Amino acid sequence: MTAAVAVVIESLRAGRPHFAVLPPLALYVHVPWCLKKCPYCDFNSHEARGEVPEDAYVDALVADLELALPAIWGRKVVSVFIGGGTPSLFSAAAIDRLLAAIRARVPLLPDAEITLEANPGTFERAKFAGYFGAGVNRLSLGIQSFDDRRLHALGRVHDADEARRAAEAALMIFGNVNFDLMYGLPDQTVADAEADLAAALAFAPPHLSFYQLTIEPNTLFHRYPPPLPDEDVAADIEGAVHARLAAAGYRHYETSAYARPGRECRHNLNYWQFGDYLGIGAGAHSKLSFADRIVRQVRCKQPKQYLERVGKGAPLAEDATVSRDDVGFEFMLNALRLTDGVRAALFEERTGFPLALVRRELAQAEARGLIDADPTLIRPTPLGRRFLNDLQALFLAERAVTPGAAPDPKR
Ligand SMILES: C[S@@+](CC[C@H](N)C(=O)[O-])C[C@H]1O[C@@H](n2cnc3c(N)ncnc32)[C@H](O)[C@@H]1O
Ligand code: SF4
Image (cartoon, rainbow, N blue to C red; front, side, top):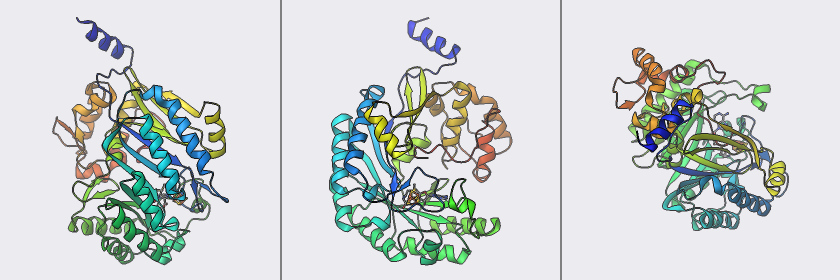
């Protein structure tokens, strides 16, 4: 037995993964402020009362990245996502300084996708052009709806006209644009949702994210629930949306994501394919692999505390190793969201454990018709996609984690 093989066997016996090659690495940057807190939102976003301290925050992000460098030493960064919150509250000069600082500290691939999330309520043409000049090459616009009544019911800071102007400018400046849209909105009918989607499709955006409005604990809507359409109407809306988007040439490549060919979000694909990501900024989550372990980290959530803690060189609020018992479920939570699933070999490449770790659960899923019988793929069947929570739960060994949503680096 060679020394290398002995190391692998020793790692696996000790319940540790073994990586010959580390997964691709993405960078997530969290901006934790918004003009106003939306009543349905449970993201780590805080109402900006007065000016946001953008200079101090960019300094903190750069310091945070420097503190994290030893954990990602020598690794190339395949994509950057500046999310929030509302990153478009920041000036183009601040985003330019941030991206220049990132480039100076990590090897960013020359064709890296660099996305910034923008709220139409913060739209200015010159600012969008400035982001593009700074290197942002994809804009994700939080449109939600093109219907003034729905936008009002959602407590959005913008109206449909502002959404249209932001969409037009974004497409002209960036070309590569995503619209975030929501359905199942208060009092929404199937015809309303179809009209809303038609308004979005009139812009022919390369990418659409389509989320059903969910009532999250610790939100205003949880305390004062709005009159949502019932389950049947929501299912009919979903059916109508899928059909309309397919007819318009969009591929439903992930539970909530639709893209024209070649316009899938590369940054999000890396999450769903269980790639690595370093998250910097208040409350940002990271998942990082090392030769013999995978760690998850969370930075301090409160912006003020985050700024203080970065100053002291200690921004982490949580730092834990992913156990062998959890890693199969975590992989499936992500991979099974993809319509095409993943190559079976990706399990070992990304978890550091042989596929045998989940062989029993895969057999159960196949027996119930929830995944394809192809041994070279892990791919949900149409039934598996419809009952995704049940499929994911098969991989959950007696643990108190709710299946459904994959871990989100910003929540
Ligand atoms: C963190 S937000 C960032 C975008 C930006 N802050 C905005 O809202 O304009 C990302 C997206 O998540 C979706 N989202 C947020 N809360 C949601 C909820 N409770 N149910 C469904 N989708 C939600 C919205 O579509 C939103 O655009
Ligand atoms: S939905 Fe977007 S704009 Fe609204 S509070 Fe959440 S992060 Fe901010």
